[in-house]
Image (cartoon, helix red, strand yellow):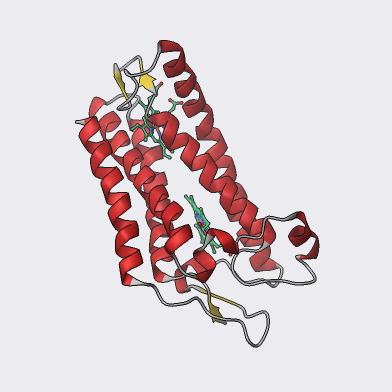
Length: 214
Ligand code: HEM
Ligand code: HEM
């Protein structure tokens, strides 16, 4: 087994899982409660901060967390079975982009969404025209189903790989994947400075959006 996912990426993954579940729970409760709607926005802002962390970690992070390690070219899809690779496979790379864009679209449109029942909205809902506000709210509603769909697909794919001899299901817990060649390099060590810069950028966005909310 080779160490593939660094500790920062693993902690980030599980924080994202918790935040997405919290976003759905608070959105459900927000149908009746103003307080829950406020909490929904706090959680949504947390998701945006987590996405910022991932975007920056894709540049400053370790080997397999880097965007440059994603295998997006069609030739990678064709050669996936013959030449398996560590890190994200070709389908895993596309799946990563799909999940992250769905969540980013959902959180971004939330900033402009408005709940006409509770009369409360995202921090920029009053700064855009009514038609843009309505469009953002419609995309935000539709996004609910898209996110449930991509997460279901994510879990189905992981289970499928697990049952067909590629045990990757738990790799976001222990960080290791089965080596492909004898000389597979493990991920490089985390640079504390780069980690601090990534955290600082995410926290800055978080604080700025929280101030916009209050
Ligand atoms: C709300 C639920 C979930 C979300 C939103 C989510 C999101 C993601 C994302 C965005 C990635 C790509 C990581 C990257 O950025 O490089 C990923 C990878 C991964 N996730 Fe999840 N995840 C969820 C639930 C789970 C669960 C329940 C498990 C395991 C039981 C899991 C296991 C994994 C594994 C093993 C990978 C690496 C896949 C690979 O090797 O390409 N995830 N997940
Ligand atoms: C990925 C993160 C997010 C998820 C998964 C999510 C999910 C949801 C869901 C499921 C609903 C209920 C839609 C319906 O009634 O059919 C909702 C409503 C809403 N969300 Fe989010 N949301 C997220 C981020 C945000 C953010 C960042 C904000 C603003 C800061 C926000 C603001 C709102 C508002 C104002 C509504 C009410 C819209 C209405 O009732 O018409 N959301 N969200």
